[in-house]
Image (cartoon, rainbow, N blue to C red; front, side, top):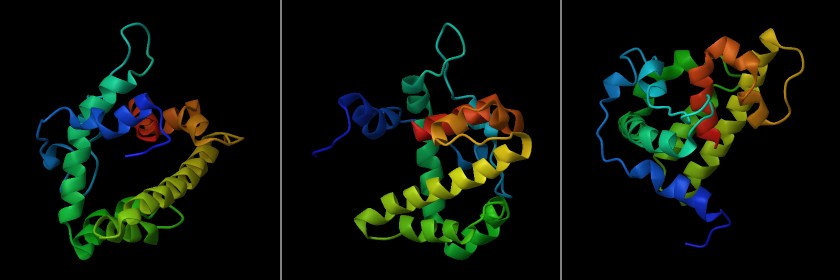
Length: 170
């Protein structure tokens, strides 16, 4: 496949997260009420030996099975089940209907639907995270990268949760 990604980024996205063949129980990641068990996710985030810098490669590798479990779980839900279980958790965004559109995209046979859905979701979450930032900060960073690395979001969500968000955008 032809790509404009560098070989390292291509490997990170297309290979590294699929190396571990571990099966994760969805109930260890998400409660029956749809709440994320952040500890199960943040326990897989890896840091460099010296300091607190993220080790992107090891973290992506460790988080791959979690992402696969979440994908399989979400893909198996009907629209009604998804709405009942998860709607309370995305109402805080300015565009909660988008999450149902994303579910439809995941179940679509259109090749570009998933990519477009993820792009829309990233935009929606960026806006919502900017609103959260403004609850405790004054000037919201222009770039999502800087927003995710901000002390303000770490103050609200915790350092480990923000590290997972940074990995998601890497």
